Length: 202
Image 1: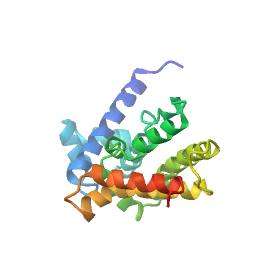
Image 2: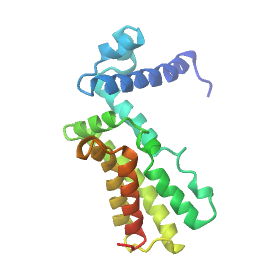
Image 3: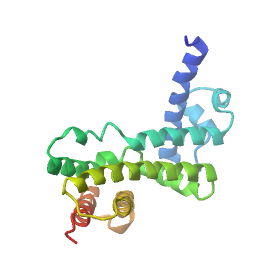
């Protein structure tokens, strides 16, 4: 089916508005962001944003859907091309605990939506889906590594939960527990703990 000029314009405009909303949240926080501030940043009239999204709620939900896609980060998970299982496992763990992977979504935005999820059922549902998609990926990978004798955990679902918890806690540790330490220091400690747990070293 041929795209109309109108549909093509919408496909171009909506992601642009969502990206600017994302940038406003980074600067102002999720509660400080507004349609007016997004419009000001884009140098457009607020009515144009309302035309595409109708309400700030719709805008927020669509932005979170976009962030779920970013969080999935398929461009990072290319480790399955590696034939050697030991190297493949090491590469996956390096990816999961890397600064680059952690920043697929800005931590301020991530925590903002986490806060919002306690008051908004729709965001809460999506937040669970976002975390669960990482868990599903890890369970799948851990099952492979278990068959290959790389890891020894009995319950790969529980193991995935633990690793997700460590990953999600990295930004919290950096921001609140010890500001004298770099993200990379916490990430290395957490990665070692995860590997030790998965391989039966602890």
